[in-house]
Image (cartoon, rainbow, N blue to C red):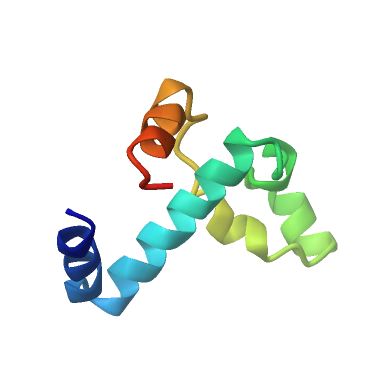
Length: 79
């Protein structure tokens, strides 16, 4: 099973693979309280005046806080 997931992941185009990885890392980081939601939202004033360019991208990477699904992934050894 793990090899099938690994092959599927490696067969993705590089842009899709990068976006998927960044979205998963951002969502898990937020769920584990490593990343604050105030660091992710798009605030044009902070982008222009304080050059916080990452806000243009990070608002597309976060989907929702993972609840029980995070525990399920850990139980199956996928995380």
